[in-house]
Length: 268
Ligand SMILES: [Zn+2]
Image 1 (cartoon, rainbow, N blue to C red):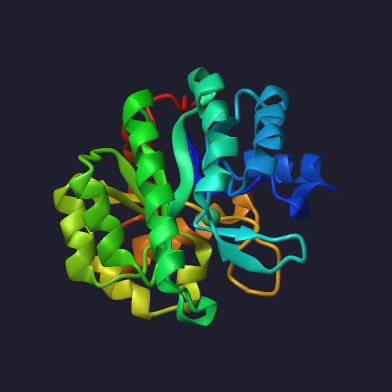
Image 2 (cartoon, protein in one colour; image 1 turned 180 degrees about the vertical axis):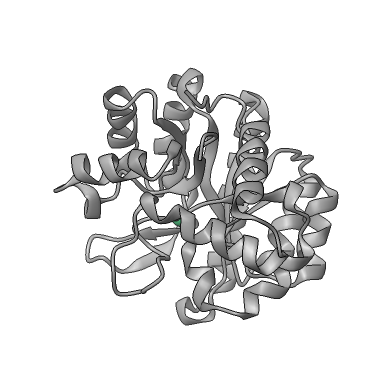
């Protein structure tokens, strides 16, 4: 595994990793992960991810961004609002030199969340404004889309976005191929191993547009067990199996893809 892996989307600043972070990081490097592209969901996480980059400068490549769903004071989920963005905006500019991308941003129209028309509108406004920020700072975007595949890709194309990662994409293959045409990349976490529906998508997206991710601490092999970046080999193996390629090929090409997409993420 001489080229190493790039975990293109993980939440290493999550509370779930606070207690045993040293051990998690050790297992990460032992698994051959050279770079962690660390995304944020909420403004209160920004400091933590930047501090972690200072602690692990060779490993951690930070992104700042507001997720379409935010957690309220009681832990309930709500749509992101323009007010949330006001608090975040100055920090994007302040830390622009250190960022490898803007993310995690996107749209989440999941039915269980019952987004109202206003929810969708607010998410779309905040997403579009963060896309503007990424263009101004000349940074790629790290994107979430759930039950909103088509509108997410459409919005990015309309905004002239050329460098994007669609993480854990689960839309139709025809929609994904629109993204491929626009030059976008798609990353898949270990959870795809337990979901055969995703194989069709993985087969159709050319390897030159695929990256690896874990989305730790979520989206592991077992939904009840905390996921961590050292599980990235599971994604690699699964994509290799589905595409009939060797794991070495998938590792090499996905790492090259990741560095093309995130040029500021250096593999040491
Ligand atoms: Zn995520």
